Length: 261
Image (cartoon, rainbow, N blue to C red; front, side):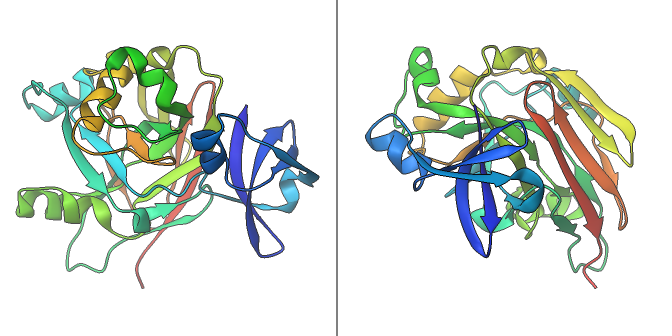
């Protein structure tokens, strides 16, 4: 099942995508899933090409992972972390598919793409054992962990570098029918050229471990997203670029880039 958010006649709604038709949902699926464990439909249908597809969820927070692919740790020359290296991106950074990444107003900047698998939390999670992690996951999506490198270097921590408005593209939808999230092909394309190509089997800390570890630090709420880290091949974006994060079995998250002016 593919769950998405979309805008129709000025109103944002949730739906389930079947072929090129969206079956409307009655209310917020995260609230329904957290309370009853099932979602309900409103009986309405919408043509996919007649609506604006939004980010598929409204996370209270995005918990992201640094250095969680062996290939990325190797390309940066940094040691593999002994525990998950987590940081956060704010909800205000979230944009959806085909939205525009806006480069920051800084004297100098280098803004990179980072294609990632996103884990979407379906119900409140606190101190979840790894063996029960799947019970708290609604599904999976694509994430671009957009990052500004000068701020990341100068600040000594990553909040500013990762938190500019538009620096968290998510989408195009939430795929709930992924049986082996640890075996997904992930690619990032810049202007049609392949720049990142990996598989989630290269993750240092797997998804059950991440859900358990993070929920031991903070409560994960319905709609929160874990961005599981990026593989080797990160690179610079400039105005006019188009970046695509493609994950087999999920879909394509596409965004363009423009300057702040």
